[in-house]
Length: 280
Image (tube, rainbow, N blue to C red; front, side):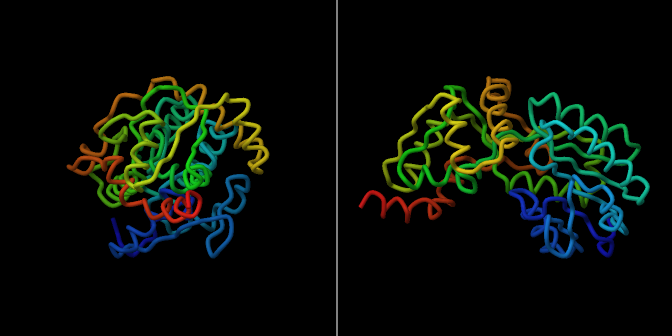
């Protein structure tokens, strides 16, 4: 890839997007990281504004907000892919979701675009525990979720970013579908126990009915479309379909993915100070 042509990162302030942008910049690439405000504005609901963002770009990391599983994603990905081809983009790297039929439909659009492509299929992020509303419960000493006793091989967002950077900068990843997961599967209760061990504090996991959880999210101020997505992820996708680990990180990078225990140790400072205050 030509380092003088910008690489587009859609969702440049998101969990994976900001990591991809930072890693590309550190490697000397010109990065055009988008957000809904800032120097490079991108809005999935405003296709008229896409042409300026796509101009001169050679490759793009594509994340759809909030998730490819939501209604309207297929039409948006189709429109974006068409504009990308017209703009002369050579390579699209799409962040997709494991076990989501709607995401698979979006993948097919990219794969049939005539452009070079790489698909990254990921399941639940480790960073959901440290960079979303999960944080408040953990800091308070109790995380209540509608999670059933089904293991999930949580993936580190930094591993996703490393694979994305490799795919964006090395033509050898063209045409690859990488299913990304962590090295072992944990239930949400087991993940909370790992966090407790890392912080040296007692943290409880409490399962709650999905309807009660949805009401709590509503009271928290989460928009209805996001509540519907969370309900879908907890009741439909979290059914065991993604429990088996995958070798995508190893295939793409030649190394094992990061373990949840290592992630928890590294993120312990996010949770520990408030826990000390809460538990006196």
